Image (cartoon, rainbow, N blue to C red; front, side, top):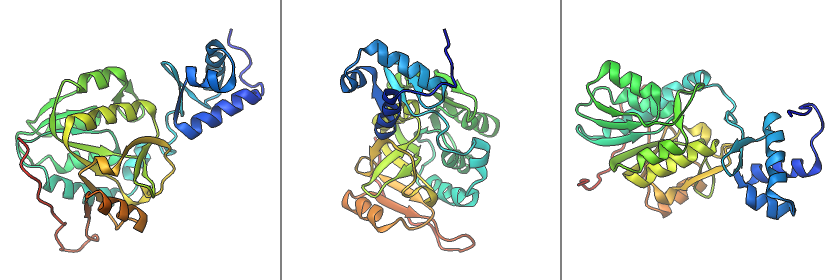
Amino acid sequence: MRGNPGAKISARQQAIVQVVRQRGFATIEAMADDFGVSAQTIRRDIIRLSRENLLERYHGGAGLPTGRDRLAYSSRRVRNAAEKRRIAAMVAAQIPNGASLFIDIGTTTEAVAEALVGHSELRVITNHIGVVTLFCERTDFEVMLPGGMVRNRDRAITGEATSDFLRRFRVEFGIFGVGAIDRDGHLLDYDYRDVQVSRTAMEVARKRFVVIDSSKFFGDAMMHLAHVAEIDALFTDAPPPDAIAEQLARHNVSLFTAPPAGTAEPAPTVEYPQVM
């Protein structure tokens, strides 16, 4: 029976919401231990909270509701669009013809795809249907699309089936978007399923590039994806704050900062050893 969605949630349910907001994701077993109740009780609480859109149910636990990145995908595509194009141009300059790569979901990674259209013989794996459509219409690239759950609002494919598909491959380059980067160098995102897919893709990529516009420095995403120590290069449109710059330098992460719009200054480059 559905119950009354307008009824006030209990003190324990309020506490569950706070736990998930702090951790990004919490398992049923861990919360049952935390609150001294049965797993079935926690499961019922999660069902109730998901109906109120305070949490999202996942297999074995609960996470933040999808869409906590505030803006609809169509709005995010035009937000800082010029900056994303400048970032994308730098990334494209680092990808040789004939390379194999993974392209993550997101509006900045979609801009990277646009910048790669002039390349030849790329072999691409992506969970972004928009990228697949772009490449199929305008290139002769070899493109692979994993299975999984299709999320209508941003044409992303995500979930455990997507991660399982990616584990079969190895690619030379992985291009990743993130929701935020904090002062300690943690790369953060909003959706538990997306984080799991991106994490798997990082494991199969030999070189890992993160693309992020400067509005996301110290952003409000809360779910841990990785640390800058685990990536090879960060591409952005403005010099990062000192705390982030120090983390990048400490872990020998190459920083690419796009020149201001309208300047002829070439983008900074970095040499990487040939990937075999």
